[in-house]
Image 1 (cartoon, rainbow over the protein chains, first blue to last red):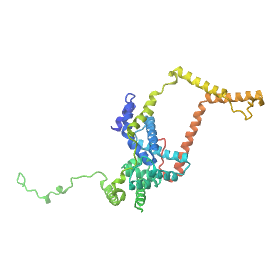
Image 2 (image 1 turned 120 degrees about the vertical axis):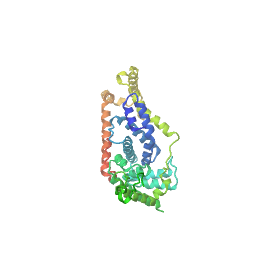
Image 3 (image 1 turned 180 degrees about the horizontal axis):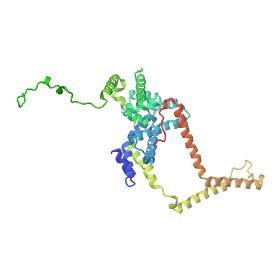
Image 4 (image 1 turned 90 degrees about the vertical axis):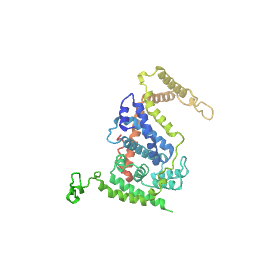
Length: 179
Length: 185
């Protein structure tokens, strides 16, 4: 369904619920996987995904349509996922690096994780990246988003994103090729 | 030879050499970069192994079907259930009042811990002190139940603190220099 149709239907009280259901069906998986790559555990990804759509529901009337609907939702998802990492950090009194180590540990021993050696190695390498590079890497490599779209989501320039992605690829490949 | 017997010589028709094909605007500016990027990808471990693009994560069975319903219940469903205060049944208010009375009576009537010698201990305390204590407790209870707005203030403070620490995180963590405008949606 076209984004514009969803927005138009959402504004009408009689079609609001139907429009929102369509929106959730259309974007929930993309949002979930985007968030899951950041927070790693299913439970956190589940919480964050629900929170994202609750925020979307509350604020959709104020959406100014200066960007695509999906980049706006991705932006909320990115913020919420980063906030969740911050909450974990506060809850566990760990530094952000230690949180990443914990997440890396979860990749080895956690539930609902099933990958072969090279896939796990890649995820662990991505976890070692600084936050900014990690976000860009996920959105470019796994989600195949255009730089222009990532720029909209993160509010940064295409040039900076290209540099970040280039650095991220270099570091990840070094990790993959080590040993 | 054409129909009229006129022979067309290419060398006499320079306009025929004109390129009739067009490319999108800025195509050649991008082409060089695209070729370099494609060449880089050819060499890249990440792009050589397609399996790497598959995530090693799983979700419980029927997760996404249930997720849709859960989200709908927490958004549209919750909004549908909101009944303005003035329309709410008086029975509900009676139930709330009864619960408060029950909680208060439980507090006042429940036996307090006794000293080890099994005396009530109250004999040692003057009546005035007991009355003061009960009055203070009553005032405290009244504060809690009447000044609900203070909860909102406390919650507002917590939210403000959260937002400030998020802003601090953005300013202190060089890796987060995306200038996220957190409430820009």
